[in-house]
Image (cartoon, rainbow, N blue to C red):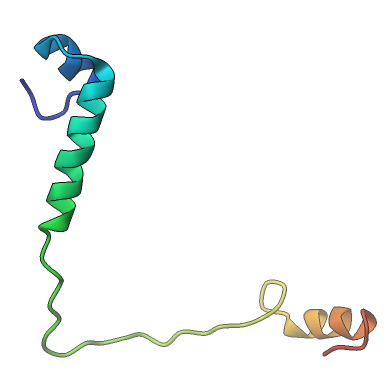
Length: 74
């Protein structure tokens, strides 16, 4: 049996009900995820600059004008 089989293929190959195979594969996947160790970060971390601009494609004035027209918020 290969590693990249669908639940239906596994069920057919093993002669099992597809619903039972679904439950078994969910348990296996959950167990694999549960055993994953937490990532440990160490050493230097470098970040590039991030620009966050509220507006339409870098035009925040358009948002201010729109907000001022609706209820006077801005």
